Amino acid sequence: MTTSDLRNPLKRARNIGSAKSGAAAWMAMQFTSIVLAALSVWFVVLVLSLMHGDYASIRHSLGHPANATLMAVFVVLVAWHTELGLRNIYEDYIQTHWLLFWSVIVTRFALLVITAMALLSVIRLALAR
Image 1: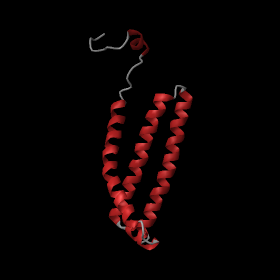
Image 2 (image 1 turned 45 degrees about the vertical axis):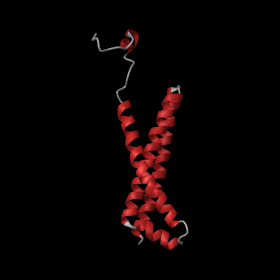
Image 3 (image 1 turned 135 degrees about the vertical axis):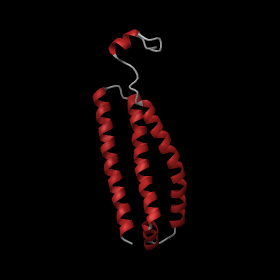
Image 4 (image 1 turned 90 degrees about the horizontal axis):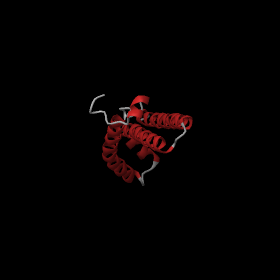
């Protein structure tokens, strides 16, 4: 036993402790938060500029390569940030292992479907110029 191991001896015997994955999830959450903060400013400006536009002008603006790329990145990061946040909530509050497992699986599947549909919409707008 090393002096740097501060876990309870019973937990050490059962190999219960840090899974060493919390830091990566925390860093991913911080990264998505920072990038989404900047992209949210762009998104709000875009929505406000298109608020009174007709369908053709909105389609033309969203079909621009820069806007299409930023929208795709925005959609993916929102989905990733949502999955990280919900998984964190599930892990904190769901005690039953099978319910936790299926909650994470269903959430990931739903976010995957929603993200795929949103990205296909962005691609259709970008290519239909």
